[in-house]
Length: 190
Length: 82
Image (cartoon, each protein chain N blue to C red):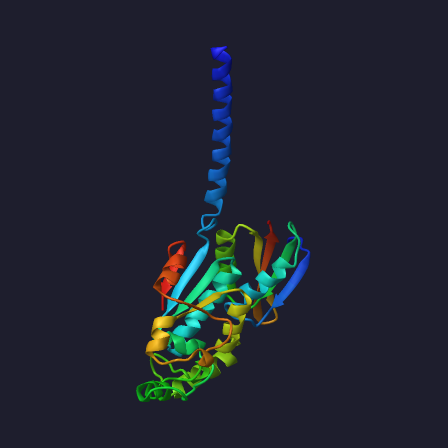
């Protein structure tokens, strides 16, 4: 009787062992899979070159099957603006609106910008070399299901209205980003 | 030369477009089918290796470089495994 029970236990243990062994082999073959198959990035910069890098990484990651989220904060919010609006803003907010680019197309380079000439040269070079334009990359990212979150605190601080932002964005704060980042394999600050 | 079910031409496309387009094309295949991707982007060689290493639904069956006239073509065979 006791022997029979022990035999069953051993068999159960052996079964579990082989299941686990198979699982280990599976996991080792695909290390980035599982619930942590994510990429979370902060887009802090509103510089064209940095935003291009962020968008290329995001579209690439989404294509590879990573759940990708972009958290736009501070100057980075420029990348998700579609227009400038002045009505209903304080003088200081109007000043910020006037000084900051109204959309991705108006952003400059982090280096060698030369009052916008540098950005135009880079755009021209991208076209010449067949690199997808920043605007197309942005559309692709949305199409691929990249989650885009706007930091509400810095949006308010810079006096940016929801009407000035492109459609289909989510709003959030630090916990929204960390909620994604804590489960992510890759986190970036751009 | 591997066998394949579908061909995708991404000649001229630069990073990340070969990946983006292949992803789209691959989702249109059924599990077990193979996609042949023809690219001119040299970086795609390492890109597809990276993709196959990361994703569990893609297997890089083979890669080859062939020359067409003066330009090199980078050919990738991707199998949808899930």
